[in-house]
Length: 286
Image (tube, rainbow, N blue to C red; front, side, top):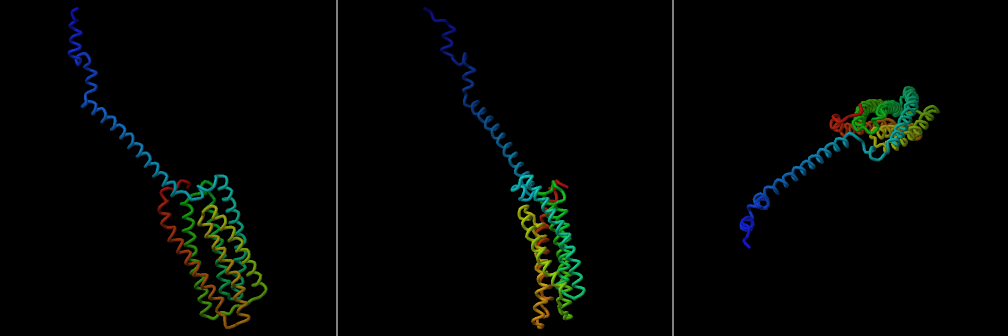
């Protein structure tokens, strides 16, 4: 039988019938398609990378704006500790205000440098507790780093001003050889202030540690200084009673406390002023 001419042409020229299929298998065109696919994949990959970088930047901003307590405490726990901090601050204000008035009275009656130092430190404790009240007055800002750093800067300034006043008073007492005196009233104020301020210091530091609050810990440090100064009034008077040659102990303790408060205030400003500048653009609670 004679072969069909069309079938013959098909066997001889397969590219004419299967031209499209052969073209698809052309190496040059296959390379172009692969290049397009790879380009699309790279584009998708770069888009994912860009998105991840943006998320990392957003995360960094949130980290700067929040304290470490935001990672440790659940919302209801944070609010519970915030309320406890407010209660402790109110109690501290009332108690230390009474002690400050009593200590100023002792200082005026007995010309005691350490009594004046304690009275001024008690007044400072009132101010620092008021600052802590402001710090935690906003429930939404319990973890706010910016609010925390502002409170610490204000505390640092108050510490420095108070320390300078205590130093001037103590140095004046040493220069004029003011002798300490003790009586029942002075004894009562010293013991009471020492015990109360020490208890307040422990409570404030415990809450400050849980809330990772430098302001609360600073307030606790100030209460601790008040407790030490309360006991120092009694110690210096008792030492002078048994050894009049150590008349300068009262003024020396006042100078020491003033220098400690001054150093702490300067350290606060050095640590916190740069942090306030870093977080001022990220504050979202005010």
